[in-house]
Length: 512
Image 1: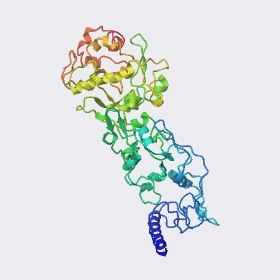
Image 2 (image 1 turned 120 degrees about the vertical axis):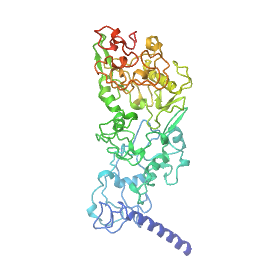
Image 3 (image 1 turned 60 degrees about the vertical axis):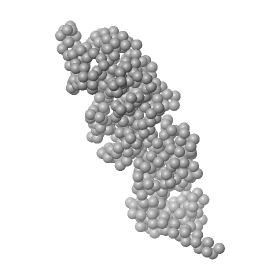
Image 4 (image 1 turned 90 degrees about the vertical axis):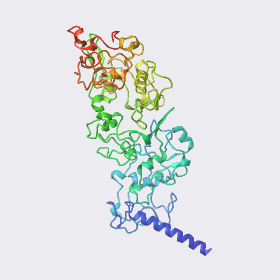
């Protein structure tokens, strides 16, 4: 018996020594010997701020801190299937310091105050406060049922050994070890690995586009993103705020909706544009408000871009977001070796799925992979421009709404275009229109195609055509795009007093 007790004490001693050695070199060492900026000049004991050998509280082994009585605002999200409640388990222990409601020296097993120079609550970034809505959710059951419901989480059975569930629940200590010297007390120094141990982000339908091979799976270290791991480009696990305005966000994002996209896909923050061909999507989509076309005599509302910004939506009453078209966790450059998926787009009717198809496009019966994808984008555009707008009971943030403030309507071209001249020629939408906008009617600044166009091009070359960048006057669009591409030289055949092609030729006008 004595031998068993001696061995147990030896093991406990070795284990305690290892823990002591780890804590001693971290900011959790609040004693005189602590290496961090917050420490007592009066107390020599390293472990006393959390543990005591006698008269301990029952919340954890040898626990020595009072627990907070605060009621917390907990994390919630329209994309979350779990239901986090008030903090439980080890999370309550961590929050006894990290919610900022209890002084650092408020220990339990003592007859007199210790470390009176630490008689204040934690402050700064380490103070999460009692509002946990901007922190990674805790205190919820993580089981196979949740993984199946979510479809973006891995089964608990395949989690790596360093991920520690507590009674089958996610708690602070799932990701953090208070006794380790790893940065932020993380259970692995590889932050990306820590995230992807549980999160299996992807765009998934009949095709699966995983985040691991997405163009977004790269590190953006430049300010204001300032990340050292891919997930950290857009997300922050604690105290998540808009990195530009400091305002609250959802889903632990570093920005709200398109504002976060524009940090990289624009130029105002000095990082981008990181888009292909260095296109400044922010400039195209945020500085181009619509106007009334007074030149056609019909008083038509003319958009220069899709209404994705808050300012545009406030003006028009419309609603559309970047993620209605692009799947941030699976987006990649389109691959011409695939014939049934457009990798850069999601299905507007189900933005969690890639845009795929099982039959060839209506207006193209050929086999050329380039033109097959170009024409299939017509079907993508018609998801809204057929007069119907995707709505979702479980994701109201993705509802596409038609303008309501007398600023026109989303143009229904499904029935009219096929009877127009350009429709009968079966010219694809994106030959003339740039979905990111810039000019009225979203007219492109550059008409370009590869290979032989399967439609009549009049004066333009039918093969490998590139009109070059055309700077079209903003108000109104004059002849530049039409005249310098397919209709080169045809201006003289029109009446001299016409100011722009769209005065007579527009969707629904009968002469397009």
